[in-house]
Image 1: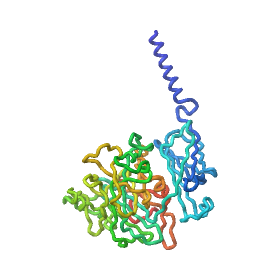
Image 2 (image 1 turned 90 degrees about the vertical axis):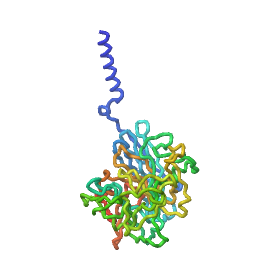
Image 3 (image 1 turned 135 degrees about the horizontal axis):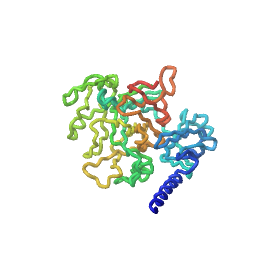
Image 4 (image 1 turned 135 degrees about the vertical axis):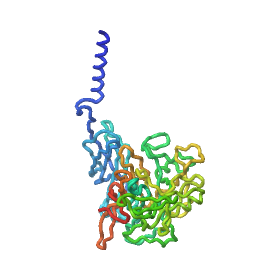
Length: 452
């Protein structure tokens, strides 16, 4: 009898604990929504003033649930009901010249000034009901990354990863020469795990890299690239007219047509409609000569089209510690980010191993440190699965958010939206330095095309 009484007592305790764990009156175990406030202010360059009419977006890290609110005159965005959890908060604010003058007392150098801010891993619960986000003015450049085709086409019916490309667009009203422009494929952590060598958002703490001299600025004033390509030229060889683009292909071939790889094996695309013709690309990333120069073999799919100009291989890892890509391969899952920049004396930039490396070995990889101040434009890509997100590589002044396709190998690209079409037909593309606002998904990649 004692055993029976003890058994029922344990059962009653379990039910009691279960009820207590979830609380009462909140919908049978569901988390009760709470009010949450995001206070938005400008950075010290603008006197830390409160920012009204800024758009604040909260995105739940686990579920993807999204809340959007606009700040009032006091700079506060008040969310009446938010499900408790961990969120990413982004802020964007566009200020026209007249508002800028009224707010800060001097004329804006550009018609529209864009401010952005981001805060990751924002905790929302009954005990944490507010946070403050500082927004900074975005750096505006005349050249923008217009389209990135990284998803590739169907692995067996299309061209797989061989048809990837990046498109760079002249968003100004003047001719810009592309000569010497650098295209950096950035490197960072692919998961949000926080550990001894990471920041609070999960990204590498580069200040802990061996030999690092930049201190905490290593994480704010620089980005890190595993691969850097450069457009050749003497200075005026490769003009980009206003409203025109350069297409930079992994392989400048017609991927709709049959090919023969470097080993002599025919390659046939079963469904040409899934892929693109890049035989008229402006540049291609042919690594054959570079690979041979370091004693390596030429990748079988790294085909060279004599009609398409080769890019210069500016950085493929430290000499003797070459990085592993056999071609200009972009992660099909969207875990890369890209930046374009200009500078003299590129070779003087230092490179570092990631901070998980404690001893340099023969297989250690190094990453070029690039000053953020040099970046003309950048785009943050992201994994399409909300549960497989990675921390940002680019600061909010370059790209406050990110953009992604719906899946890998689905023929989609990400492309900038058109802001306006001028009477002469030239398009001005969106450039608020917030990819979530500036880009859309294109169902079929289209070199030199536009979003509809």
